[in-house]
Image (cartoon, rainbow, N blue to C red; front, side, top):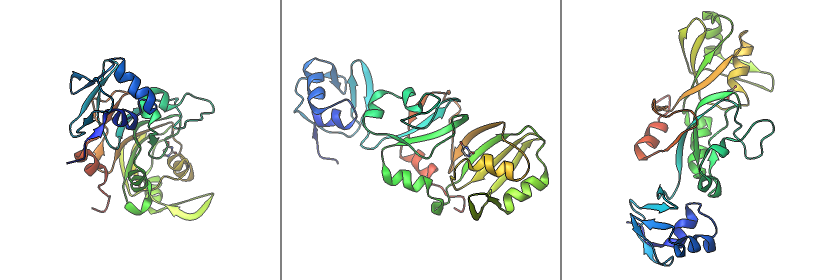
Length: 241
Ligand code: URA
């Protein structure tokens, strides 16, 4: 069981502002601990199963945050954006305050499953090709997808900035114009460049799956949800497991 921590420290760790601001939130009667109004920012609280209510909104305590987000089109996965608003503008401010980062980036026009976390080890594990964690992209093309294009993707494609070929680890043709392709790397514009290299193009790109974790069907575009240990287990499944 984790050691109890002062309420002020807990609020700070969850991204509610400076220690001073967090303490003022308590004095202003804006914080509840497991449904009961808190009075003392120094009070030590057990973090297991803790639910805070801050300014009338409930917040589960998470030592490290793991979030699944359904990314809409026309948002950039960056804090300093160039042409489009940031995905971080769609997340509650405590997430940004506590330093959550996208786990790999999706292009501004790519939609679908995006992980967001403040656990550096997790981010590394999910993005390194060494762990063989598959990312499944549903690709819509303007030209019919041919078997020879699929063979080429599976046999390896050389992109212009690296002589080392990149491979699709699986291809599942869904319709004449849609393909579900699994890759384990995350090179710059990788799917778009792979499709161009085999003589087709990407009209739409949507990520549906990471590891063995599928985008929840009830997670609407622009919405997020907490990931729990059983979800993290699914996410960690490698394509070779
Ligand atoms: N590959 C791409 O080309 N774009 C993405 O957003 C993700 C993978």
